[in-house]
Length: 403
Image (cartoon, rainbow, N blue to C red):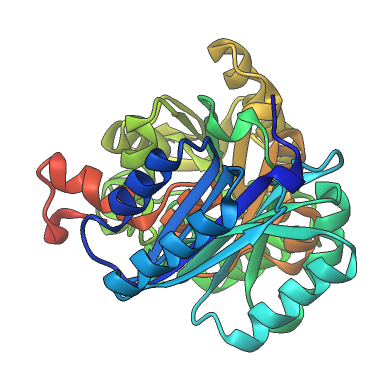
């Protein structure tokens, strides 16, 4: 049974960290016969902060004096307060608020925490997820529904130039999940069709149409068929050359490698071409791939597409198909994309992430990541940079081999 608040003591120690401090304090508490109700400890730049909530003995003042003397001997500051209740889980709304900045300035963080306080929510805990190449922190917030908190913080994130993700604090964050990614300008840098167009000498026209389609200004299927028609007569060997020239976005391999260790499954869904995406899937050990197939006759591109076009609706349909094949609920799917043809896919997923996306997509997605590191998404899932590096080191990866 939880002790009454009036019958508890909160003991707080601060000072230079050293081995044995926690054990020494707990030994003193053991001698007093008290029960430990709650305990938290953090070490920040060599400074220890230790908080212990215990049941209060009859002569609690004597215990407090003994602890203060012990703290003085350890070179620590000790505070003992009576009648501090246990941390209660608030009945309404618990969220993880992940804040990412490059850099993350104090002014931005002050503005964000201010908005959280304004709506009556409480920050229960703050944990650093990464310190380079971006700064990422995870705030555990309670007291307000996640959807309300997300709507409140989104404009503040834009005003402060930082990324903020708000997710419900529930078991879904820790379960096996499916990651469905767009390819062009998401998994890889640039647009494959523009790279092919460069070989065909029509890059400028194709780029103009691509940009309009990604902004949602043109029907995707019509724009794709028009762009592909401009590639008629291109030797199929250009596909090999384009694949060799592809550059993954920074952190792509790290993200896939790390999440595969945790049992995550991956799919890529692209408005691009299977002749490229199938090879990417094999290289990265991606479980599923869906894209358009360029028609090739006698070693030349005909300017046509085989079968139905993978458009905006087709991407969402593929997501649902892959989730069903794995027995994964759509609420457990994470979708990542940047263009207007990704919108249905992002909406179908439990968490839709706009990655360096067009404004239309950023506004519609659950959250947006605007730094050029795909593995930043790991921080949204509660995985810290330290854990990633430790796992890589244990697997024998060297910094030069990582990506």
